[in-house]
Amino acid sequence: MSMKLAGRIALVTGAGTLRKPFTPSDQLGNGAACALTFAREGATVVCTDRDLMAAQETAGRIQQEGGQAIALALDITDTAQVQAVVAEVLAQHQRIDVLHNNVGIEIQGDLLEVDDDDWDRVMAINLKGAMAVTRAVMPAMRAHRSGSIIHVSSTASLKWSPMQFLSYSTSKAGLNHMTRVIARQYAADQVRCNCIIPGMIRTPHADALYASAEEAAEGHRFRDSRCPMGRQGSPWDIARAALFLASDDSAYITGVQLVVDGGASL
Image (cartoon, rainbow, N blue to C red):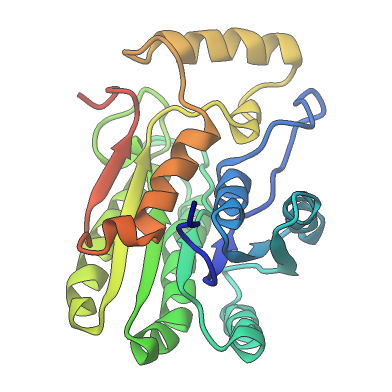
C-alpha cells in the first residue's frame, strides 16, 4: 500500500505536547498527532515548537516507529528565527512540501475585560505568527510549483462562544480570511492553502483550563455534553483531516474551511 506523503518534507509548528501534571503521558496534542500521522504516511517531519524538549518528544516518537523526523526550536513570533529555521530545512532538504501551522493560544476576556497587551500577544501568535511562517516557505513552494499550507483555526471563529476570549475568536476569524486570500493569490503557482476548524477536541491543551484532575474530569464531561455527538473529538480526528489536506487526495482543493466539530457549529 502506497503512503500518501512518501518522500515529502513536512514542517509542523506547535508539534510538541504541553501537559499539566495530571495529564497522562500518552495523550498527544493536535500538532503532535498531525506530525505522527504525516510520518506514518511517509513524510520526513520537521517538528518545531517554542519548547525544544516538547518538539524532541514528538520527533522521538516518530523515530521509535521507524519514521523520519528532526526537532527544532521555533518561536513563531520571532521573524528572524522563522526565516532561519526555514532556511535550515531548505538547505538540508531543498524543499518544503507541507506546512502545518498548529500554534495558537487563548487568553480569557470579553470586550470589557481584554487588555491591550493580551490582545496584542494573541494576535502576534495566532495571526502574525502563522503569516510569518507561511511567508517564509512560500518562495520555495512557488519555485517547486507545489505545496500544501494548512492553518488550524477554531469554531470560535464562526460564532459566539460561551468561553469569553474575544482576542482568540477574532484572531482565528482573521486566520480564516488569510487562508482564502493566500489560496486565491497563489493558486496559479499550484500552492494550496486550507484551514481546519476544530470544535471541542479532547487534548492535553484543554486540560490547561483546569487546576486538578478532578476539575478536568468534570470539565471534560461538560464539554462532551455540549457536543451533538455526545463526545469531544480526538487529536487523531484533526490529524486525519490534516493528512487529507496535505496529500494529493485534496489536489484540487484550496481555500476551504474544513470544519471538524461533530456538528457543534450547526
